[in-house]
Length: 149
Image (cartoon, rainbow, N blue to C red; front, side):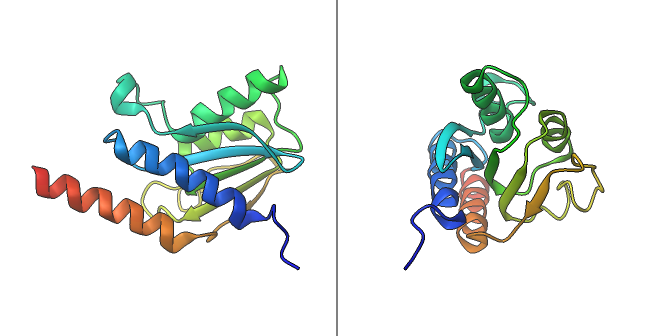
């Protein structure tokens, strides 16, 4: 029997957020934060709309999750994000003490793994969940952006 609430299920929710970013002309990265198989926060890139370089999907979701939980720590929570977190987002995730990060596509240039950004010692990270779908969405965005310019 297939578990209805697995990593693929929640990454699909993050991809829906990424699609919303795409429709707004934002780099299509989406995120959801889950606790006890319940989505408590959603976010997608809003850097262009808000003219704020910190308005990444993960930052939007962390803020929403903290507001939902009434505290700054996200212990027992899992972040599902379509692209490996950047150094800035990984730093915020460190301070949030989030338990797990699951990402779709790797970011070989700006991602936290290649930049050796430290995560909280109790945080686990897993990649490659719906990687093809996340990568294709990003590729489609940048192809469309190049064709418009």
